[in-house]
Length: 91
Image 1 (cartoon, helix red, strand yellow):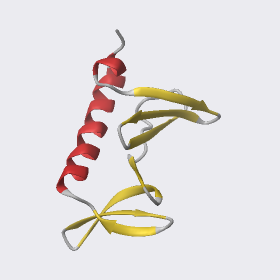
Image 2 (image 1 turned 180 degrees about the vertical axis):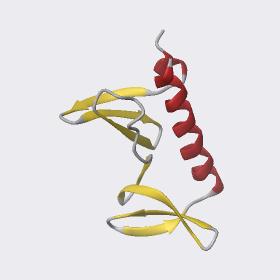
Image 3 (image 1 turned 30 degrees about the vertical axis):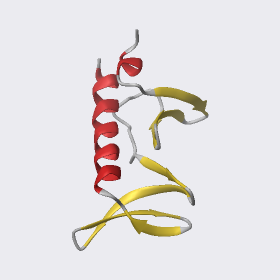
């Protein structure tokens, strides 16, 4: 069993400049072959891909279609996915 599978993370597809990883609503791209090139984790919303942004201490999910307040559960999901992906790719 791969480390990714242990964390419930799927290698969704290969793109020309990197690899996409998905778990639940969370999506991350690793640019090139180096796992340390992990970009920000995105979160798939009804309006499309959004990113966690903090403004005045408030968490929001912001994308091309605008933004919405992030729930504590969404913040926790994004943080946990990001950490789990780093661990899975480091071994």
